[in-house]
Structure formats: structure tokens, C-alpha cells
Image 1 (cartoon, rainbow, N blue to C red):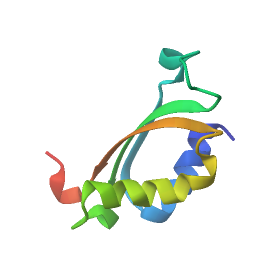
Image 2: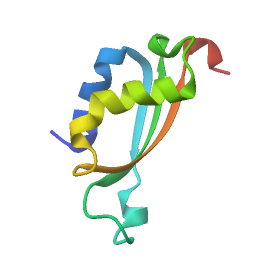
Image 3: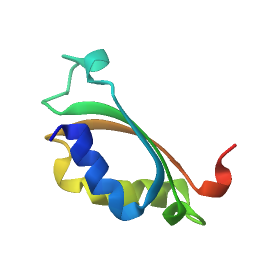
Image 4: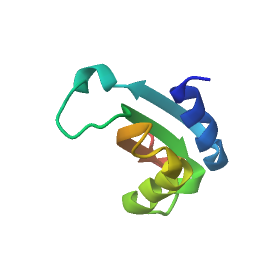
Length: 87
């Protein structure tokens, strides 16, 4: 199982209607402070985000991935939307 597949599986508890994960690690290879782990951009839409602040949305995602940070995930850029926020 790839790391993206594992992240995808971990986030299924938030019932995403849209989930896109991009591995940006190649853009950040060897930068100072990175002791390992990948860089990812995550875009996710879920009804679990409705009525929640961006901070609470990020916390839900980080809780699902907590044991993967920072060893396997070094950096995570999150775009978390509720269904009614889609354009």
C-alpha cells in the first residue's frame, strides 16, 4: 500500500465526498529541517466539516493521521470544505 493509499484509507472515517491528495515531496527534497516524511497537498470535501471552523476541520484530519506525523508525513497543506461551500 502506498502512503497516499494509507492516507486515503485513514480519512474514510470522515466520509469524504471528494478527496484529492498530491505528493509534493519532490519539490521539497533535501530542504533544511526535513528529517524524513513526505510533503502532501490534501483537498477534501466532507459533511463532517459543516458548521466547523477551519481549525476544527484541520484537527479532524490531523487526528486521523496523528501517528504518521512527522515520520511519514513531514508537511500537509489542507483545503477542507463542507459540501455547501463548493462553487
